[in-house]
Length: 427
Image (cartoon, rainbow, N blue to C red):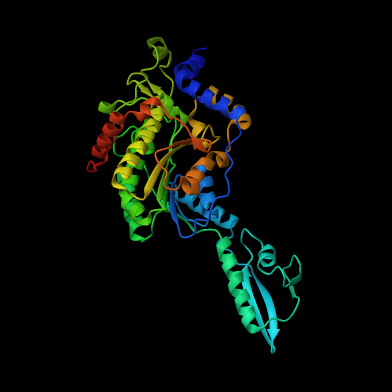
């Protein structure tokens, strides 16, 4: 019975927040992405894009013709993710079909198209040549209603290739980034800038949850250091590229993944690099929690409170950064996103009884990674959000975040303290 009390009663506040989200998901349909405009020529960075929601976000953005850089700390997993998405959208494959567009004075006029595209050649040709095609078989053998002149054939080739280019997916690549290391963050930014690429969308998605007490390379509590401080430094170091890439009417965008757990989050500004206490628990519950792997009662540590604190910090950060950008008139917006309760590997660190309970519940009630990613994709590309920032988005719509997240004094103090912790000048 003791282990049951440890796993449930000690976390009642945060689990109640989770229950509210589950109840909402039971009685409300998951947000479905509307048709989004193509993002040709734009570049996005997605942290933690190798699995779960980050992978799905990357897939969607590539399909919108963005050049997507997946940033993660597992090289093999990252390259596998890139390969998987490339194969899905036909990048890196060659299977060329030859199309004869007519014979003029004994010369064959034709065009070659790679078949591995989201839209089949058959559909593409029927769209571009609706009146000239008498019959088009599955093998893409083209029968014309009349011989084409050389001039008309050349125009047809141009139109066909333009239609093909408009429907191909964007590029993909992987870059190493360890958000638990400020040195790695700085090196990532240095290498990225050396590529000379613009940056139109930054999706701060990577994170850890309910990990037993650990420190980052720089001595910060892991949840706070990786989920928040790593992204705080990354975003600030990339602001100049984001500013240069945006323009009025086509703002660059920063999307910050938070969580409903931020509603139960608390911040201790004088101990941001120390331990996270379970101050919301009674002394009796604290005694019951002794010995649980997510708690270190001798040091007063709670992995649940640590995760909630990091997610609250991300919302505070998004609001403060948006205020600064508005004040300076920058063509750049920031929005925080709540994906809901999503079935991802983040829950693997639950205590055993809770993990056993979570598995059947997740299959029935949790959202899939693709569903969880939809609001972040929407924030990254939706026309109706052009120039709109400072929102907390849940299920595709603006939602109120916690009362604490709107505390402007706390926003400012967290910003200043964070600058000091990562070695940036206060702005």
